[in-house]
Length: 197
Image (cartoon, rainbow, N blue to C red; front, side):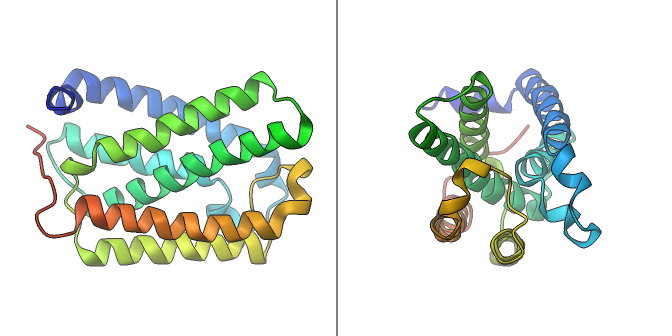
């Protein structure tokens, strides 16, 4: 794995990832467009989960290119990239089992969201989190779960509506796992650290 981190810190790789994530973020907000039109204004910020996660990472990459760390955004990025990346993978696999098939868009969502989760974790040694950053990310993430499953603002998969209580339960524990990963990789004593140069 030693060869991976110098590659990840390479400015050309950072710029490429920035372009890819900007495109993915813009497409993600476009994908949510129809749902956002029906969403009450007070919930708007909490509905487009995945594009907001990738937007956090876009900001992290901009900071890295400036040779800076913005730890609060890094905390939000690692937690939400992993959480919503894995969530979308699991939901699309569930769609496959419920429907017996999956569209090309479903396979694209599986691939892109898995990559989203992985990139957030790969950059963990470069983040500079403290406890309070993870606590703020926990408040954001768990509050978002309440908005999604109490006020039903979650991403729409009509074929999975009958499983919403189970999906909500899974999502809560996925949030806890995501926060635990952020602590383990970025906050615990003697965690692995690298510098963006």
